[in-house]
Image (cartoon, rainbow, N blue to C red):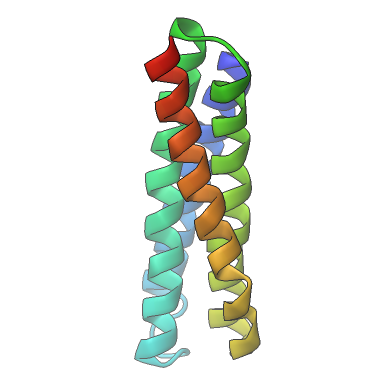
Length: 122
């Protein structure tokens, strides 16, 4: 699983950098400052959790088990749901998509706690 989570983290980081560049160059002037801020929040959380997946990849080599694997999948799902909903909200302007975002946040929190548990138990 270490290679899977490391590769996923690297891909999320690359996509996050591309999304940040897209937001900074292609979306400026096309979206309101509020929607640019929403988009940038999605990018920021994606990049942070891409690094989190790299940490999970390392943790799987040191403290293998179900908790560390769950942490990786939860960080991945959290990124897709949290950042994805913010990207969709900012690009579409449909505010109702913001109702999905907290589910990704919960996945982030549970994922980080699962990682802490895996390390503590290790």
